[in-house]
Image (cartoon, rainbow, N blue to C red; front, side):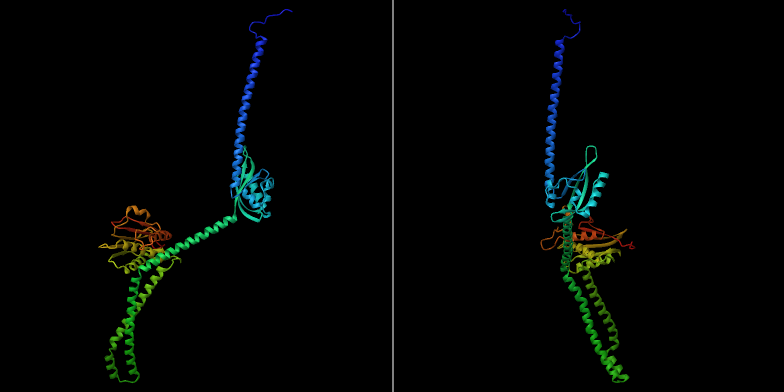
Length: 442
């Protein structure tokens, strides 16, 4: 047979065969490289998945609260160790069980309704249910959240909650601690009052001694007058003559004694009223202030408190009081204690200083009443001003102060809806108390 040459420009069979093999080998190389890449990605994803499983297992093992994971059909998929401990069953025994079967019969309807609501809204919801445990039932405060797949569809549920018994116990302990704190605070207030009263005992004794002595002296005078009148009326009953009675009346000086009798009675009543006022001031100062707030005159209360402090002072201090009547709503005993603390601190700051002077003013300022206590002492150093109202902060020597006066005064002012501030009003210290005025007092 004759052979025919290939036309020009055409490939020979050998060359065609070589190109095909090269292309096949290249395709195989690419496929192998892709397989290697896919294998590496798969190994990384498996490692990440294993890490995530380990992480989730650690979470489920460590949480103390109840944690239950359910699938789309509301069957148990995973539970925390706390659930295993409560129910007395392992995760293998709980897995696949209906979720509502973990709860008491009375709570299952509420749990099912909550699951349906979460499935429809794709938002978490809260429900209170009783979990069946090895020891009975335990109330739970549960949050039910949806598990969403990559297309945003609900693929299961996550239930997390805490035993209400523990919450209620913690709340009871918190309430007891709060009550103990309030009791301790009230005790501190009473202790500070007793400390103030202790410093005022000398002045109290002197103040009570004056009116009591006055009443005692008037009682002796009344006894003497009674004897004279008994003598005169005895002679009247015996039938003495008019001339004899006139002479006896002049001898006993009954006309003068009648006028003195009225004076003695008024003096005795004034002394008794003074004793009554002193006792009332002491009772109001020592009261715990837990009663109903009343409307009172801040000026009169401040004046009384300042005078009480000054009565017990042994050092010469000039007290100037400038007040205007202004009505406030609150507890007079507590406000009186604030004023006493401020005046007492001023007196202590002026100890040993010549020309010591304290100025107390009370005036209305719009819908507020303003009380200012200032002195001409050394004042409060700038470095100490931020801590001046801190509890137990004091610049006095040991045994001279508790460091609670200003702190308690600051709290009392806040309880009355006011404020207590350290102001700049001169070379000495200046404290200003703002209190809301009573309705109708403006």
